[in-house]
Length: 187
Image (cartoon, rainbow, N blue to C red):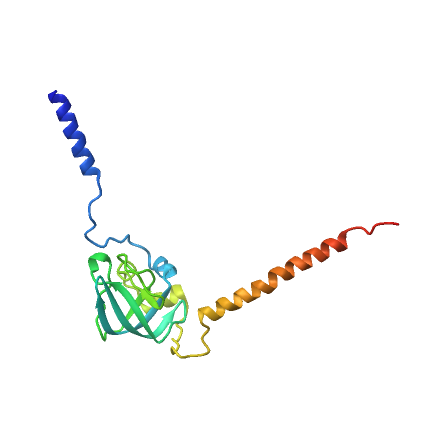
């Protein structure tokens, strides 16, 4: 009976020790600079000009001086976790810095026009030379009211229209080819 009790207690302690604990800090695997920039949505050089805390998230208004990988607006909203323990990036208002943009950390939900920034991508000493080396030359940001910049909805509508024309056209071409390749019936 005593042996059975000891085995039950040992099994219970074993199960309790195997359950996952609560994560208490941001833990990021070290990654080469080239991989960080390759996986980023964009890399920007600019200045955070305002900060608004919103529960577990912080929204920074960020004035972009240069961008890499893709063209972005002159002013963007960068969303990050309010805690560095949840991989949030603390930005100093008014201090120019290079920022790697991508996913938002700590389960923070980004809006349609928000860019995410995580401490995991912004811990390495990534400089402008690295951004140019791995993302290409810098790109000037565009004004939010720049009518020359294509909007995703316009591009999506163009692709949908092209598909509506191309698919039926392709089917008709195939059917005509099939008919022409059949031998004519002999009378």
